Length: 274
Ligand SMILES: Cc1cc2nc3c(=O)[nH]c(=O)nc-3n(C[C@H](O)[C@H](O)[C@H](O)COP(=O)(O)O)c2cc1C
Image (cartoon, rainbow, N blue to C red; front, side, top):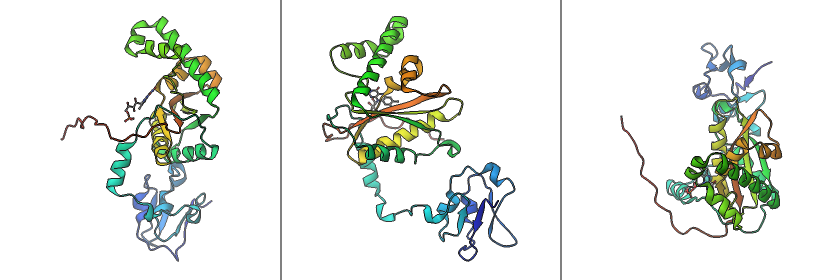
């Protein structure tokens, strides 16, 4: 079976597809001048689709990806450096939420954008759990607090270092430091044997976080929550993660109650120039 085909009536033989192929498995045939697959194409191809996406004439077609089904890049949507700086620096972790739920379609859109994140070898290893019901979020947050209480008992030094007493005290006073009263929480989990699951899931959640800000939603990483999933089996089981998976991140999402007016300062880069 051909793994890719090139429409020779459209191909301008610029060699960009070969230059951009991460596996260097698209080669320019010196005889015909057109791209051809290397012998190990099928074994090495990571299915990133770059060869199709980069071709300016739409000549390149993979057996699983035709140029016609790829959304064109809309240059009118390009943002200026000033807009990018403002957007990236003005994004905040949001911890006060309205009592409104996010429609399922918007949650689906968040996940769709999250899945556009880079991943090692294009493995896209992430799986998602979306806790849609706010009451269920509270219930799981309570389980995290159960875990926190157990850590305070079993490892008081670590509990002190992590400030866990404050988490319990707040919970007992009616304030949820785990999920901050957010209506939803989204968890990324992946195969624990894949070397890059942590990085890939983190990047996907970061994509989600940034896109959430762009559509007026608020989000905040839920560090205690995903740490608890991996360390507290009742929560792991309640969420139904596969046994060969770990949670690599969790993020609370909802409609922000307040609007930030300024950008707080951050440390300058600690950099060594070589
Ligand atoms: C891995 C990670 C875990 C975090 N866990 C929590 C958390 O459990 N609760 C919380 O309120 N914020 C949490 N945060 C948010 C950070 O506190 C926040 O990013 C930081 O204070 C900087 O604020 P900013 O995101 O608005 O710039 C977490 C952030 C990261 C990256």
